[in-house]
Image (cartoon, rainbow, N blue to C red; front, side, top):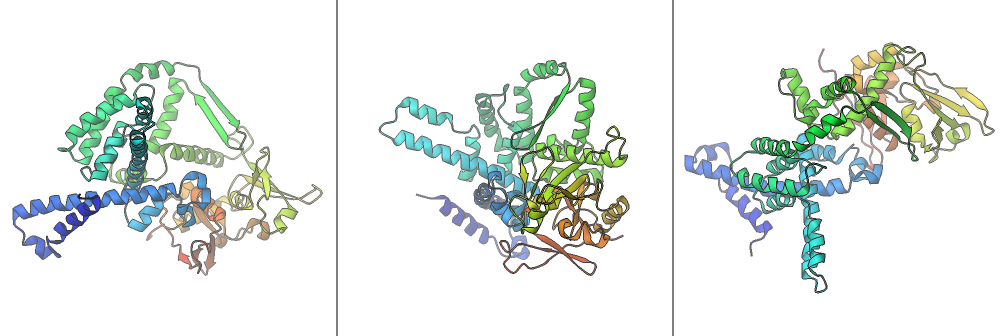
Length: 472
């Protein structure tokens, strides 16, 4: 019996026989060139299958519930996609694609094994088997085709993303029928064409939801903001068509390329749209991060006026004993929120704007109150933006407008020292990673260096952090 391993071996041997240089390929006859291109495509599909399996493994070992002990975070990355991109040299979009398709394949394989076990069980009846079969993902035919090497990872992701997810109007059964029709056509289509066809199918299936969405738009507006039991804050709102369109326009301008793409763009906007499509965060995460950043920017536009006379701020409460006890697990709390916060979180949020540190002694007496403004002045912050050109973290492309000012010297030991040379810009995700994973940034003369924790690099080898501003 020929196995997948045999298929891969035979495919790579066929490619190897084509030659080992441009000259060898140039010497091929036209028929051999065309046949060779097909052989290379077949070998690539088989290799991409394994890449997807590996990506799914990395994603599973970096899943959110593992926090900073996950595989990607341990290596200094914000996501499994970022780790894969670094190790493979691919784009963010390719890394995201491998994780998405690999996860789909892993889920399908697990479900198929349960069905197989039920069918082979002497105690299982038809109802039991049907129950297991119902749990097989509707995307299973896509995953099986990739595993068999008959469908590329690119085409598989086009099918998955184009057809979308199950909702009230589009059931798994409807998506399954559409997928069957799409697979029948896919052999004559490239990945881009597959996506367009899948998207048209989805739009056709979702026609019934149009009227319902229009009716919902007439409901009364509201915005609820409340704190959950775990300390997180949830927003829930509904807007009138007039206000809602303005909100949508704002977030469409930020996440547009992730929601169908920008149709007409100049060269600069095209580059921006491509970066947005390759961002490893979900569209919802991008929207959430953008809302917080927009509120911060609004507060800075005219402090004390935009928000009715009082600039928003967050008070962090910490005891002197906690500061001197050598980085305890619980160092303090945010005023009004009963959930304790770690020393790392205190260090991070007090680096940037809108935070006031209030320090207590053991008897509960206030001994120090920080300032309700940036530890770095606006002029210093602007200068840092020009100097750093954005987030200083390795391979990060966030602009200065989306960064926070990080103090190289900790606020608790150096009293918020505001020397411009001792501050660098970091985007919020990397600022969070630095404090929680105990990475450090040091300055040597006018150069900045990133020092990884021992868990990532026992030698703690310094990594250069050059400016992102480019040549003036």
